[in-house]
Length: 222
Image (spheres, helix red, strand yellow):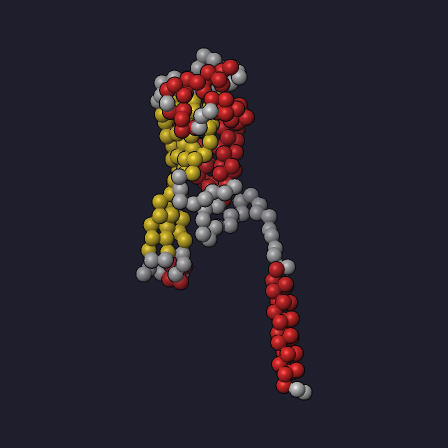
């Protein structure tokens, strides 16, 4: 056989094998349903469900349970006697990481926990967003007294008065050791009484390590 023909057939054969291997790898993706109680997948580079969900459960649960001991509803309250109305204005991400679709999920998780408390009556998000649009305000603008008066006035006109504003903020702090690092995540909920301006805060923390070095992965000290 001619040497050039042999080399050409060898290259074609190797190329075909590489294509088959590559195609096979692409077609082998699998998935599993994570059942309640199963261990969550741990993100290798950023926070995920294993980080955000415990933060929400701890922070919301502690804040609402503490407020349930002393409820002071406003006179406009249209709910049952003793029900405190909360206007949740959103989640602010001040962490080093992009939250992507988790930002919306955190909002829904917090809002759902408020509803499920059966003591607190949240203002519908649709009304909250409509009120902010009508007043041309952002959530941070509501700390200015005249902006707060404008916003509460619009909400009352829509039949949606409330007692407290609720803000959620996610922050992070990073400690590095060569290529390895540990990140401290903090979810802070701030509830502000719109009549007195008095604020109450509750935070939940979670530390997570990201290991690149072999020694760190094995749990060995440097």
